[in-house]
Length: 277
Image (cartoon, rainbow, N blue to C red; front, top):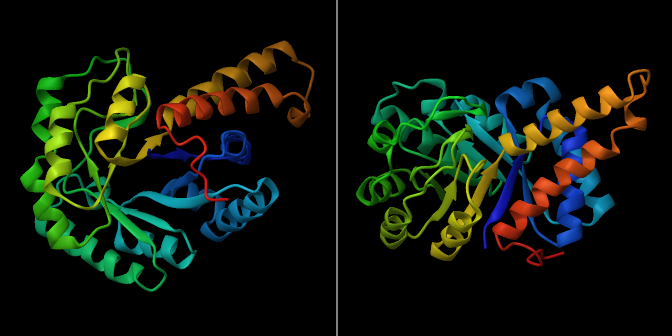
């Protein structure tokens, strides 16, 4: 099975995710980017997740997603986040292999102080966490696919716990479903012993997730699908209650919509019933 890693940018989304985790007895990762850390505060996020963890009785951890610098990764480590994704190419798309490796090694070393697991990749990962209208240019995307040799070399050079593979997965939602190269995933899995993750899971057919879990992916990121459900449902509720200004009185439908998305993903990831608590 794979752990679902779900991005949040507000309290409502967090609660909906944890409700789904409790209902299905599934472990989950709450993902926060540098932008959310800037808006909410790393320590505040840590406290909020811990409080709801106790309230709901769920197995939940925090991942700093796509941290673009060593400095920002350290903020997550010092706040007690259990997972740290260092992605130097996110902040500098033209970063050299040497720059990416050296920065990643620094974070791996620093994370030893708390035991946080470190995730990374060796090059820029395409797409963005929003709704795309353009078609997927697979001829271009394949140029940045992971290779078994490249993954093995990077893992040995950096000592990361998790490698984020690029096999057709893209950040964001597109007008056509994403197609994952599962044969390539097999070859990568056979080459390395570290954990493997899939970013850009939104808009991917369930059979790809199910097979990826069987092959050995242990973490799958979901963001845009949640944001779409939240935004569309909130707009619907506001249209239906134009005079209401106390939004908390009418947003139960928003919670339910986000929770439904999370539950569907957890079923795909085969993580229902896998919680340790």
